[in-house]
Image (cartoon, rainbow, N blue to C red; front, side, top):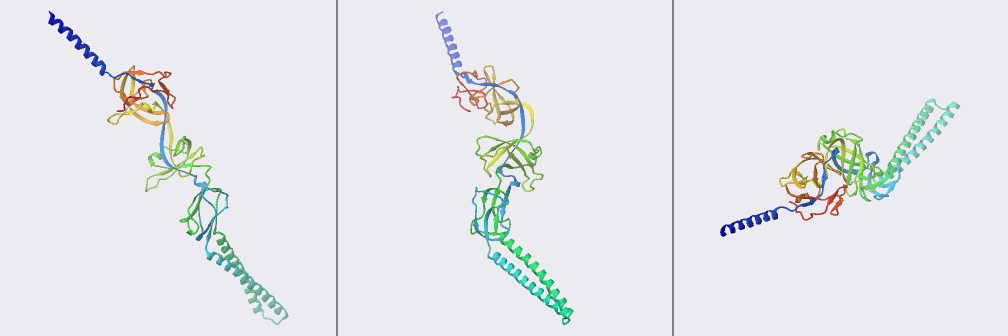
Length: 380
């Protein structure tokens, strides 16, 4: 009987050790925060990117209408200028010489007219006294008419030469800020738009000039609201679509979308920016972005709070926004999902759910409480 008793005791001890080993291998409860899947209004949107620029009507690229060398630049980048302010002076010796020559031609034509008037008066006296020929009077009058026409033509040429001389002074076509200076003193200009001198714009109103594909342009309409993210700006800026290109570039298959900024203070022209344009709204479900994770095979998944047990579930996501991520498949309204430390959780792992008001919970930027317990869970 004694050996049988030892066998029974040994078996009992072995079972107890096995049970203890299983309990040691069982994962410890993870302290997490769970939040319900909420019904929400989902914005259907189109994302575009581009650069900040003034509206085309408030932007002017100034070129010289005459060829020559830049003799003076009267402004600097960043200067505020009024309409008609001097920007630069173009030097061309031929312009001054042409103006002097034209003025001299006017004086010569006037002298010829004076002589013609005197000749007509003399011929009229001779004809009146009966000693002059009528033909000589007619010739004098014809010469007088020709000199009158020459005075008019010379005056026109002088006016054109003077205007050409004045055009060497490049002036601002509108009030605004000098954005860029493309030419320095000593550089040459050819009198065309190929050699611009300065760009002036009114930057009180700014726009995002973005390029989009035909598919992205299709749902867009003028007046649609947008949310802009400007590089370097701390906060998003509201805006609206003000113009959609009626055609696309056949070389790039892209069309321009202009989005006006509601506030442009501190925004620099030329800065890169993106805009999310809302084209419609529909009902759906949303979870915080922190509830999502990627599986080993690259699928989106969440951890569902099934009572006090973790259930890893694959989901399909839709639009992402500042308020969270849309879930299009895999969850129902009211289900609880883990919103913190999701990377370290495994399927069927016990959960210790923290209440929003517990000491181990902190508030997230979206207004939800997030447990700070369990920082040691490793990301897989």
